[in-house]
Length: 108
Image (cartoon, rainbow, N blue to C red; front, side):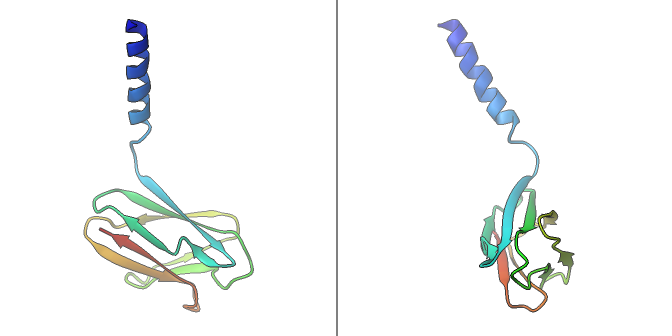
């Protein structure tokens, strides 16, 4: 019985160890646009947005963030990592270069 309790404790601690570090939120660019198009993130949680363009069938070959003016190229089938500011509640809007395909990140 004691060995079983030790095993459960070890498994619980191993699960906790894997949760450290920044959180990654994945967004795919598909024929439908940014998926998901709306993301919610907890204030104060270090978060990296990972955008992967999976199609050539849209104009979303870049993501432009309205509030910062930052522009990120989205090469086909490559992860693009963007560290998100989460120190204060804010809604960040981003879109393709033609402003036809849009997404948003809500920091609460």
